[in-house]
Image 1: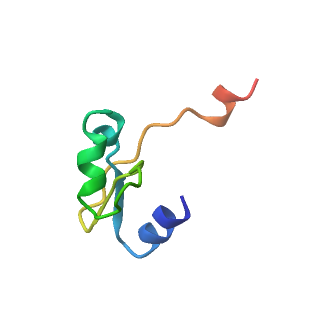
Image 2: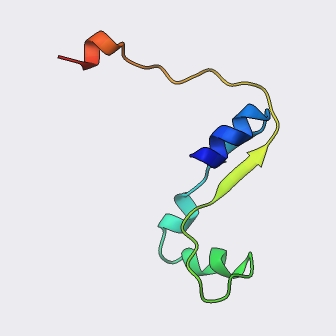
Length: 66
């Protein structure tokens, strides 16, 4: 989370792309790609610059706290 927040402060967008590593048959293919040997790849993050996207809708504090 700190990494993503720091990237945002620098104007860099970060997005988690975890679907490929959640499929057990694809995980070994992704682990070989960055050269981590027999390690297990659990997280894929996409970084780059792009336009600001609309923020996710959030419920108000009053709607959450009872």
